[in-house]
Length: 77
Image (tube, rainbow, N blue to C red; front, side):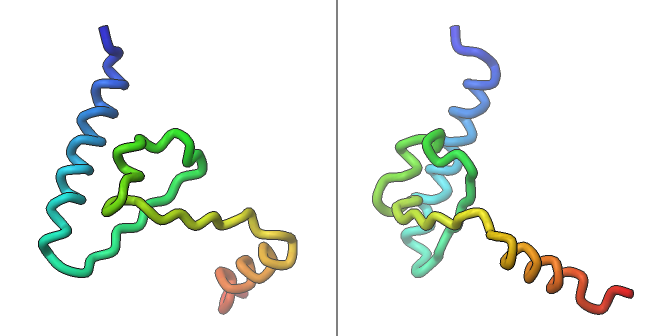
């Protein structure tokens, strides 16, 4: 028997697939997803017309982290 968590995951994936398939008729819509463990994304979600492009964004280096901190603390005393 399938565990409760796996059943929930399958229902969520099925609902997401149905929603994404319905978007094609609505014109140019971009859906963006993010994960830190891409190998666990259901293969059905990675098919053409769904999440079919992948962009890897690496962990920021020291200088980039400092820049991010400065942006988010701008205007703080």
